[in-house]
Length: 243
Image (cartoon, rainbow, N blue to C red; front, side, top):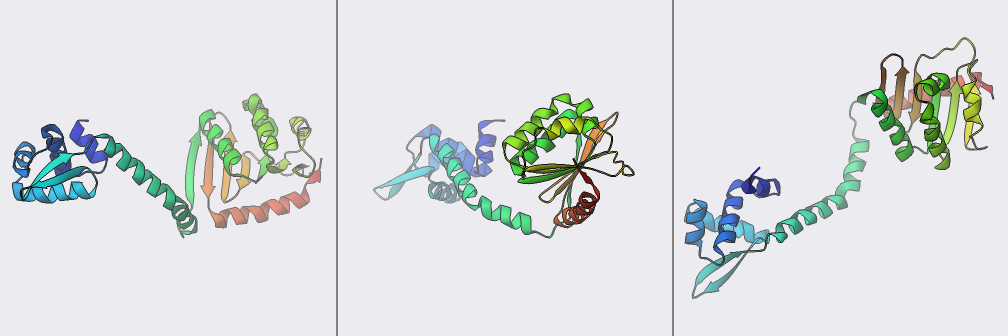
């Protein structure tokens, strides 16, 4: 990528980049040398110089009725970008609020392998105040025995956990010992219920993870679907036995 392209990426159009570079190379100059060096018509070059002056990248003085132009130091372009980022940061909360309220279709994502599962658990740590699990801790523990550290992080952060586990598993008891009273709870599902996926629910997100030969996950972000899954979860929770 050459200098002109980089300037365009920074917010200048093609002709603005040419005129700015010409003025930068010439130092203080009248419009004619700048237009010649930039290969742009003189009349049009006046408009471009005015545009660059509005952006703070060109200055000029009038001497005996003639303008003499100078390009400001290149660091000003960096400041221009920083100002744009600052302005964007100021409106970012409003944009996020609009995004959350937009009546759009559910957001569905697909994850593969350990890296994908790590992303999901990091989202839980970053976003969740409460998370509900349904599935097999044994499958999880066999596939990723170090994931006990993820549970420790969730507990340390004070995330509320409601955990529904498959009957007949020994591993859940080891995890249960980490739980803090009033914050994390575990119950055992009836023997007739056998989930082949590990399921997670927090906020507006519902995730299903398969720990088979190919580890993968499907994440669905939808307020309506999350609410439906909460109703189903509450039914299962009432049917399950306390540990």
